[in-house]
Length: 317
Image (cartoon, rainbow, N blue to C red; front, side, top):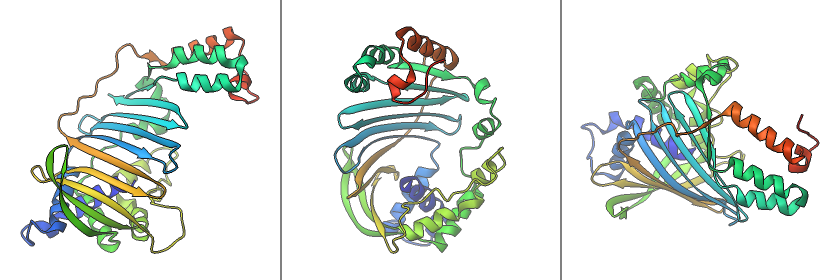
């Protein structure tokens, strides 16, 4: 994701050039200082919106991360042609939790296509909607790959920072097009419009094989070929293509507080906040095995099989 990559690379790569060498109030150095401050923060929250561009797909999302204790929470609500699909996931003390929100619109859609499945779909919606489901660490750790990934360090070390700086020097992918004074959440901010070279960004992303988290992941079972080649802006072979990214920096705290991207393919706006992040295990979460057993019983008691519900040839045994 370009948002995360820009935060990481500019923040890490700016320190040497910034300290005592140039005027701190120059736009490039205000931006770099903000990136440094932002990526070094161990507790961060985001809140955003996205639009697919056609108007048929849009949604909201939010997240909170505390890297010091390896806890995280993420929420996404996608709306497609009036059908809403909300989901939330948490990671707390190596236990995973997820909750699917109100599925009444999905249930209505199933009923419209298959009247025979309407009753069962409604029953399933009531059973699943807004119920927390837990996947205990003992279950996760049964998979060697998952166990290994759960143990990875979430923070960048100084070697990572230096590596990103070196690779950004080789593949600089951003330039400042303009700056302006603005406000974000009623606080004074500096607005930066950046031009991101997609070719350079992709080369930069492909080069980060030496990051500690990549090297550690490659030691996990089945991930010896893990790479950073997935961190690309586009699969297009078009050269010299660029993306505009707008970044707002809080003038007082010197942190990045908003990032936006807009194009013919859609738009995304992300607001960032910094401070204490406390993520707790949800109460009354149903263990995943219990949930699956209850789900199967509901299907069997309704006389509905998966071919009716999903339009496939699969059946419930």
